Length: 223
Image (spheres, rainbow, N blue to C red):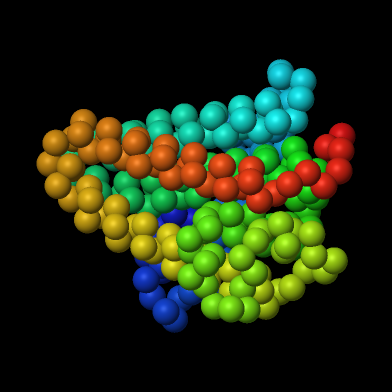
């Protein structure tokens, strides 16, 4: 996963390498849905929440709360070091957050009855990472509602590439913004960790609530 993070961070701001960064983004999507190491995939995690609470909406709230906590914890851990760790912690933090947020959104989609194997559903998951504001600013050919894409009868590869490009640009803005914000707080290591935890937790919660709002129930959850 660290190599995916380095690829994303190194190529996000380079126009000619958008396709490379997009490939790394696809890998993030796969890791989020299928799982990696001790981190189970989105379906498994969502299923555990459903088994625990016994109803879909409560399970969705549980998925979001869990990922907000996880994002805050990894935001603290990857930003708690000093100035010398910044070049390493930024790509690590970026990848960790992207995987967690995509996993969370995929869990919400699974609980609402969407097939995570469908290309159009995966495009919609990436759209959720952008949020309403970024989608409103996108070109007119980009749908504003992830649900419209998720429920489309066929996968649209051109739209998928456009969305991937937007997500790469969105992540690029977050990388450069976080570098600037943490440049000062890194001088006080624990402060940097606290800021990282708060920002990552807040962003993850906003993403989860957007996915909950957009990905309305399609059918009974698959077994």
